[in-house]
Amino acid sequence: MQDQEIIYFSLLKKEIAAKLQQSVPGISSIIEDWKGQDIVHFQEDLSHKVNGRISEKWFYSHIKLNSDKLPRIDILNLLSNYVGCKDWVDFKQNNRGKITEEKTVLPKKFSIPRWVIPSVASVLVIFLLYKILGPRTYHFCFVDADKKTPITDQPIQVILLNEGESPAYIPSKNGCVAISTSKDKIRFIVRTPYYRIDTITRILNSYQDNESIHLQTNDYALMIHYFSKARKADWEKRRRQLDYMFTENAQIYQVYENENVGMELFNKHEFINKLTMPLQSLKNIEIVETIYTGSRISTLKFRQMQN
Image 1 (cartoon, helix red, strand yellow):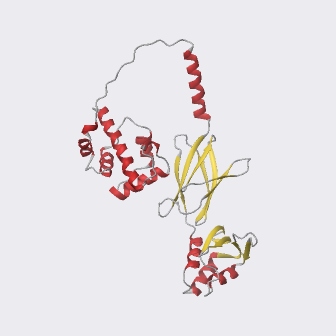
Image 2: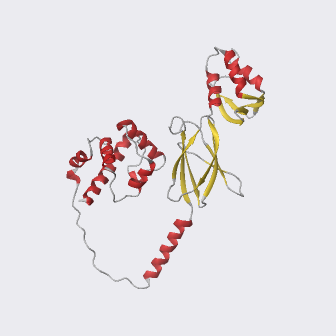
Image 3: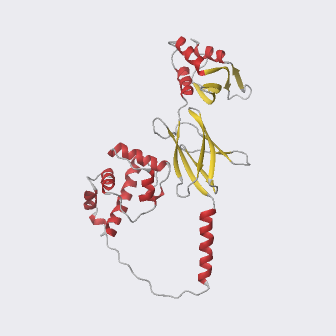
């Protein structure tokens, strides 16, 4: 009876994958292959459609590891509801015709030459040593700490800090990075224009290769961006706000795409004057980098986007 329940659960997992493909067309149809951002998509779709939630740890325990133990009945009811059934009992009734009894055919006995056994054992030992000591890939996805949503709409720069080596720049894709290492500890810097720069240190757990990193919003960078796009009403108030955001000796660089110009340097008061002029000499600013001293900006790099 338990084996039949496991078969029903396998059918449920296939229907879950097909259901999520309706919302995320590019996702794999094999649920066991999901990781990182795929799991985040599933959590969000589950919350949106049936107001339910499962943890990343639960997903790895019951989906990735193909456990012979069924999830709790409340989770089975939730997942059944996600694929369009009232509950777990209703799902099994709807899929009764798909269950087939499988007969096990025992293979004929055969003898194994003695010389084969040591060779196979040696290969297995080498394979296990490679799996234990060899490099492993860890996935980190970045999430807005306030909104609890993935950060996928802006560039993310990840700088891997290797002891005794030059920093390595890791490309990000869809708000996630993959880092391969055989070390038990890693450190990396995360930079993105509208979130605070952060240095992440992780003691790596060989049983967990996916993690979400929460980043704090760079509020001042966002405000400057909004000021440059908004109308210049209440400009005196904005001047006071900008004056507070920057240190007195702040250095502000405007970066140009044109190689002949390079960049232009402003002091704090020059930048505030240009940003709050009625003629809007600086429009639609995109922040490139901010450096803080204490709670104020001491260095700002920006570019002016063309309308």
